[in-house]
Image 1 (cartoon, rainbow, N blue to C red):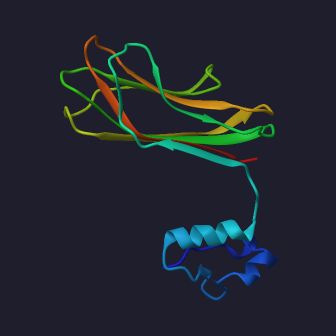
Image 2 (image 1 turned 90 degrees about the horizontal axis):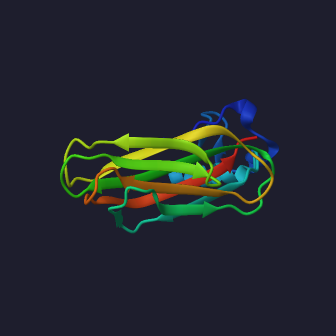
Length: 167
């Protein structure tokens, strides 16, 4: 099963790739190979930056603690998409796990308060925000977390942040 590319999206550079013009499929056996093939076509070059922290962190703080910061190189002004992923859990009792994603410590893209269905189990959270207008320059994207009850522990792991220019 290949990845379909509409005929109007192909360029002359695409003619030199492992592409079947009859079926509109790449000759790839898996999605990763197909993604790499598409990336090599150079349809459009956009800024893309990514960071992750796989380690487990915890806090008993009622104030936000930083789990991950993605600092970009100098970016051109434009619209960007920012996405995030993490896994979380809490130690015991009923309380809310709080999470936010911010740009430059002042623009909150997402802020959530979540009460899990079960204690001690890891829960996944992911999301994205598109059409974020950024000025030219270096930007910081933060993933922060905390708890909302004294003496309760919130845990977070497998944190990921990514940003790419969409126009």
